[in-house]
Length: 90
Image (cartoon, rainbow, N blue to C red; front, side, top):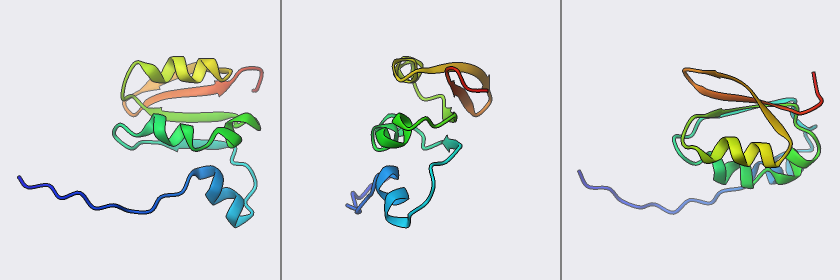
């Protein structure tokens, strides 16, 4: 197969939420076949304000450590991936 690289403009989730004036989400689910860490890096403000629940596709061993470093506890795994809860939230 021939693949062609096509550059596209992207914005972080933090930028999108701010530009639209949306409140902080309570739940985020990310399934992008390998770009989860890059997306998480673009939502540091959202994470720092206390996103209660986040579900991520299982794309590598770094996700659990990344989330633990930010105060999230692993609560479930299913066929789509991992679910984390911000420690201390119900």
